[in-house]
Amino acid sequence: MKIEIELDDIDYGSVAAALMPVVGEKLKDAQNPMIRMLAARAGDSDFIVRTVNALPQDFKDKLIVSLLNKNEERMRASVTKFALSKGMRFRIRSVRASL
Image 1 (cartoon, one colour):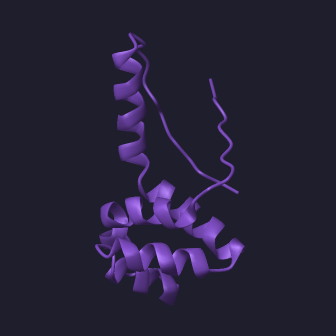
Image 2 (spheres, one colour):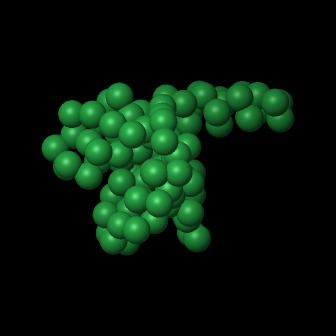
Image 3 (cartoon, one colour):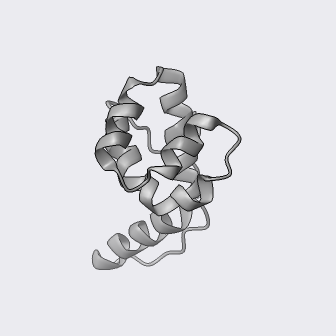
């Protein structure tokens, strides 16, 4: 079974600031210099918010998709925990973000 969720009205800076400390280490060797710079300053949420919000829309979309996909395990755990708190039992095989 698949469930599709579409995101809209995204505050890119806040999403990046929340996810970057979790996945920043994994991104320090990214090919894109902007992503490497953000990863190097993963703990500076003000810098992340300002920088990400100033980026072109296409780059922001790709960045958030990348951050979400790098954070798949945590997203699966969060959804599973929520489901269990509501009495639902199932196994989430994967969580994937795409454009």
